[in-house]
Length: 356
Image (tube, rainbow, N blue to C red; front, side, top):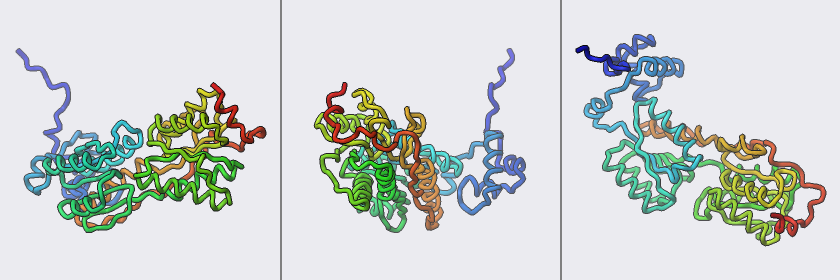
């Protein structure tokens, strides 16, 4: 009986030398690109990665780990893996670490410090070489102590310590730009749907909202400010409350795109049009915002790029180099969900609240 041939070629026959020959570089250069152990030109990196992909080369991680005393794995503590925000950031992290020969151990912290600490404990038992923490509720002191034992990169906060690099997005300026955009279009009654007030980024986005109003000489009206939870349900509940309470507003600034989507759903259900009756601005620039109806104005944080830079920072720390990367600057992306207030606007919240 003839033995059947394998359906796919096995990459175990592809050697480092074969990859080097295919892209015209030395085996040591291929190794440096895969390990992230030295500076290699972008052009050579691209050639090596193309050859690796074309030949199906798989580094022998176990052999590398035995030789170097490393696991070539990185722990990642996100918050909600089902969130499109974390999915985008994960893509940037995974692509960058994979190209350097590292695998990921991923866990969700669910905005709970005890759960995040448990995740990190589990990762340490897996002997990860470093940890990336996406914002979260862990105390700074916990992260500083952890960085004494293995490299740590954290996003969403300002923090300095040996072995630790923090990437802090400028949420204040991003929120200021969003609010200023609505003010410049003639809106003065701008509702604000914030995030969990315990989160530093939620606090900073509220600060940006308040700062833009102060700069324009517009008094802050507490009746226009509602707490959310960064989920669609929170944005929907906050908008329902604004309408049911009869609060007059011509625009909504939601502190993230998911809450903006929830707000838009409620407005549609109540018979209000975006932007003809109410303008909406979100924050983050998730993929769905460009395809909303209408496409939604938002503040871009370049989330995938933020993930890529977090991974690059960790690779630097793993090689005992000081990371030089910072978080991308926020950028207002104007689409079709904002326009000047309707001529008839003027305390029309009663009609809003009774529309079904």
